[in-house]
Length: 306
Ligand code: SF4
Image (spheres, rainbow, N blue to C red):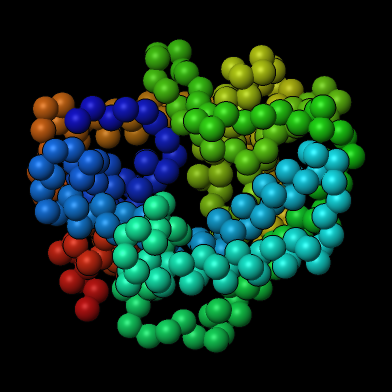
């Protein structure tokens, strides 16, 4: 299988655990082909399981999108309504994730969000953990609503908002396609801001890679000079914080080199005609990753954690 396009998620998965990359990007796609091998079906079953913290981040993103949708149509939405929407979403998604595994397939024409704890969990989520998840969502949404950035987005007028493509990408000079997933873009004066909200722990290296990808996308999509683009990573939890990410001619050069090198590495692991051998993809040496990996039920590497 050829490596189709470059994305930070794909490369990050490989760097964190090559075997996980094998499951996600080599084995799982076989589940949708005729006569899939049983291990592909097993991997497909767990591929989308999400941890509670990542789920909190997804809920925050969805609710911010709903808020922006309201503002786009010129309607108000109060903080109380926003938090009520988030609370309803948390309850419904948690319940659907639990029921998905016991209901008949017809009850869920589309796969709901599937929480890792409902597939692998042996004990209910503790009160403290549930409270922390809710707090992450509530604090993040309040950080967004109270921020000067949200004020500028709203008061700058929706005519300055720029629609992000569903499959946003940039084409590099050598033809390589770079997939990106920014959350929002808008013009402010002669600057184009392209933004990603985050609720997890900051990671300077990957944030530098991400902002470069966003800038390249904005440069191609809206013909904006690179030095007039302000790509930003905004952390919303535990408080509003704009990451101080390197974005300069030099960092763009470095990131482009990293993209080419990592793409070459992934391509060297692929077999154009058949499924490569799993053994070529090592288990991670950071064994604590296995505790939360969605593939731990199908992967022998997880046994090292017992
Ligand atoms: S269980 Fe561990 S070794 Fe196996 S795929 Fe997951 S992180 Fe990698």
